[in-house]
Length: 134
Image (cartoon, rainbow, N blue to C red; front, side, top):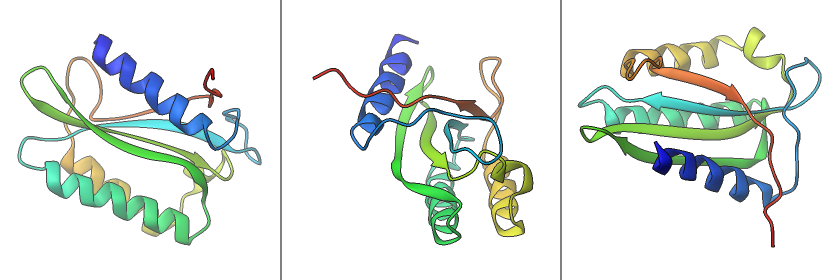
């Protein structure tokens, strides 16, 4: 668990390099999210491609800010793979009214993940970007 917390801290610090942004859950304001995706065994490579496709589609549709954005891969107990994707929605209301193309990608993601350790296969948490200490 400590390793995972360190990864989260690193992600937040890395994203702070591009400028501070406060996560908002109100429509009309940007919302920075940390998405954890717990890959089903054997689905790791496909899930990685779907995560990249999601980012590209959201970027092309101008639903997200270009930065911060980072995707990392880690392993949990039993060498089970998970991904963390950190990005900022341009508007906190977008996920509630996402275009069909994005919803289809989310369906693909759900097909490739599994619940583990009392957590859902796909988990979203609103976060605030913190400027790293020099």
